[in-house]
Length: 250
Image (cartoon, rainbow, N blue to C red; front, side, top):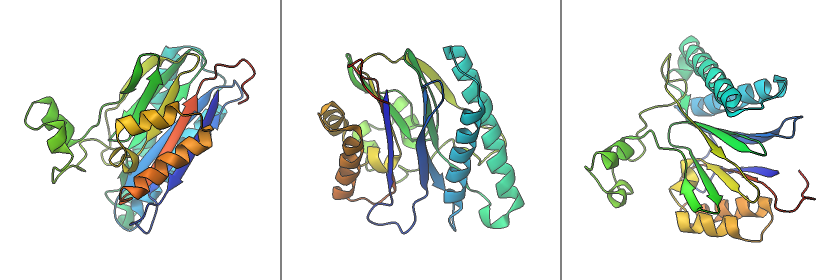
């Protein structure tokens, strides 16, 4: 298994409120995380950093995860705690009031991947069945698409496109989506903030993931393309690949 994380401020914003990483456990499994912070006066940066740092800390402390049920229970428990921590921290510091962050995270083993998401940061899978989005955006425009009020094309130019219905830390309790999928030899998982998904098409993402470039170059190619297409937002990318060759190094 190979993994990489890259982030970029983009071409317009002065600060990067995204955070994330890929964290290798002693068991050989990976935790990949992408968080896109929100809130004035750099509060979003605080929220996303808190979410990632806390997940990394708990990941390093855990003994092992062997089943999807264990992975789902661990993610649900830790994200619930992180939500409370960020919410309480914002209420204790007036300059951080209202801060929050999206979150998408994946525990990747040799047999399965368990993904949690809150907000509109996404997870995609590329496998023998093709390329598809695993997570569902918790956003106003996605709800409007689901009930048939607007088309996906309309959503791209909707004036409230960036309005989230869920985030980490904005309420004392938050709901999350958790799903487990098979993660087999040759599969590729992509996690990203909307700074990438809003600027690079699914066809382009699939093409880059399928390329012969090394994993770091793939992430950088995605970021460069998002910047070429405007780069109005921070851009973060995590990629995890299972290897077809038995000698593939971690």
